[in-house]
Length: 88
Length: 151
Image (cartoon, rainbow over all chains, first blue to last red; front, side, top):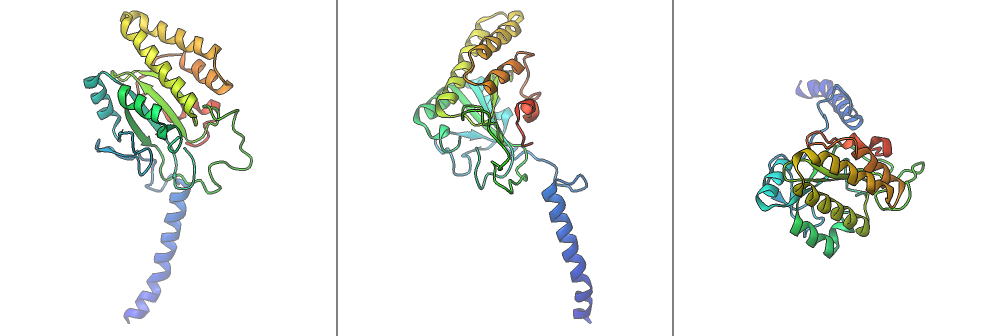
């Protein structure tokens, strides 16, 4: 009984998963995967294995607050896309 | 830039001494299926801000005013030049009366456009002359007209 029910549900689950994945990749307007900004926490971190000598902040507001306190400028690097393969 | 400019000792020191650094990935979900540099895409000139890709550098005053910005990959010499431009302009703005700052800002970018090292750099300076912006107003798409194709 349980196996029969599972065999009825499984194709639907798989189809739904494929559709969501496709929509996410395409940035489909109905998908909840709106462009998001990574890191709003403001924690002081390094940039995922790159440029380890530079202290990077996730939050521009925090960077500005520190800049005001230390009398510095802010350098804000804006990027888009997955950076696994290549790119800046 | 991650592996070249941001790894160069002089730039690391300059950034550490004079800047607070922040970064944001506006669309981390975006995949470059065919790689970042597709066959039919041709960078405009040399890697000196010309290879407009998926990156924009923004330099801001501590009060949140955008001093300078440039799209694309910057090599070590180019990045240093733009860091120094931002520092110099900020020093000028700090010394000036508030009412004169917009004019000084526009004149500095206009002058820089005339002596730019490449077309992209010149056009970026020219775009910036229009008005001083707050960091909240500055969107990644600001340089779309220069071929900043990944948004």
